Length: 146
Image (cartoon, rainbow, N blue to C red; front, top):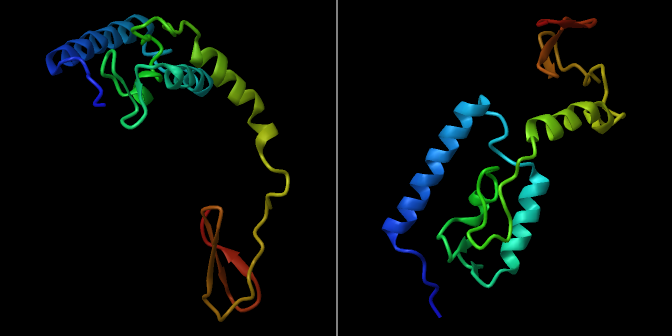
């Protein structure tokens, strides 16, 4: 059975209204909170996938015609069947601060802080590590860049 979508003019009208709302919200909020967190995106997409109006082959909603992967990302978007609503959560405030606080905790502890030089080939042999370059002068590695 072929899925029916809203007409192209209706899909265009939906997209136009949505684009207008994005611009309006961006101007009002200085651009903050337009995109929801990955967690909210996953929650929304799981709801969509369980809906009988979800087209699994095209990953689209047959109610509004939207591509679900794009639709679930925007804070001000909502399901046309009211299965999920706009998000007023401040992603920039909540998620961004969480990421910053936990950044050091997520860095593996076994990353070397100093280069482990290879056996030099010949004088002038160069080695790059962590965006810095060294050159073998015959007796030691000399750093070329800061």
